[in-house]
Image 1: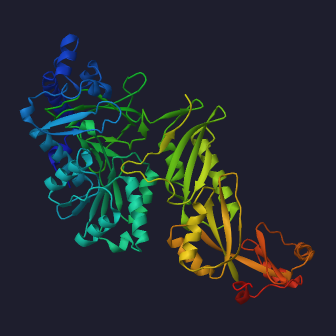
Image 2: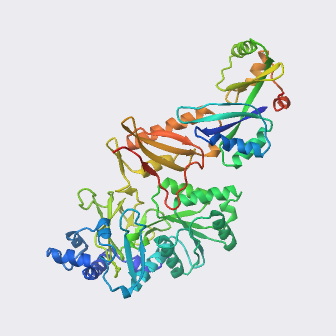
Image 3: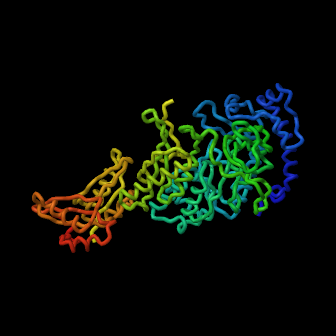
Length: 432
Length: 142
């Protein structure tokens, strides 16, 4: 049932003590990096060690801009000789963010990834096709090492080329897949175009989806398409990549591996902790990383701790699916709007297809939100009245959700540009 | 029962060609058609073609939103006042329609009415004394 029974079911009190021990080791490592050495050295108020997990609140936060400002080696604690891999962001806007790993870090990450996959039900008898980009993107190698550690047969398929993906799945009897959710809906379309049904023509038994925020409704749709469960994977490159938190068989939140990460949820405005159950910004501290520890890193992801115990028996707490990022929220006519709210409404409507696009425009000095919505081919009845009604219904439902009246444009299926990699959902063309 | 093919169409350059390219490849002939649009930036193109089932299948396979909709085709003499007379009879039968279009040939003209959402349209129109073109002639208008 468990990859590491003792660790995964460690009683609360012992888990917190383990965190304190590992936090103090991490703080010692961190001080060896130029950035934390300077930060903790300059300001004598920062304790060298803490007695309980609450003690972390006396330490300063780390933000993405600091990673960029101290690029490339400012957070590195070890001589370069000890480092065996780096992963970095594309850095299209300024310096990239880069994370270095020594052998211990890579092993630790591979183990967390194997634990995550096992938690979702992957076993060494599975044939696992990893349909994401390899290279600097952490979803490729991160899963690869985890699949190998777990002992399943890995197919490092990489992203794209849907016909080849389908051929691989059929040739080798793929039973499990990892992909981003928007790609799986695209892959399903290709199955259909080839007159194939993934439920009959493959041996799939589970999916792992992640690396892209998505709603429960989107997950339900993917599960209906492929006829198997889709388990939510959460990670971010600053915290290795995937393998940070994963769903178990109960699909009721993502167990965040608390032996490897110390988790806080704070109010993004006041930076004060919020009680369990309340949404806020996820703040994380690495507890098992030597080369590139991060202390109180503000992830900008919005989630909450789900109160209560999980029936699976794991004691590591669960976070809710990411409802958005503090930086993908947009403000329109004074209302705070997360794209996920809009996706949530759209995906509940059976006539709506898989793609949508939100464009913020200035029309005669008025900011407006235009939403292009794909209609499903099979739902089309050929009359204007039906489409008219659908458009009005969507307008009302979205207005009720976000308190701004959108302009809904119905578009032909497949006419929205498909993103390579993560789907881009919001285009802001407003005049500033 | 005769059918037209109704196709969802965004009001954008090049989009209607996506439809006609499919019809061309399948060797389908368009007998008459109409095109409308809404303020939402989209509309519907209604096509009376020689092989509606084939057209529908080919369009759907190409990923285009299409539907088969029931129609009646009402013939009349191709001269001034014919349509007026025809419409009076339709109105007299209490039939209200939202989509219709026409075509004229050698001495004869035809009025195509979308009856998908009008229950018993054919029976009512027939009992009002209107001639309805039999299915086999609808697809060979000449």
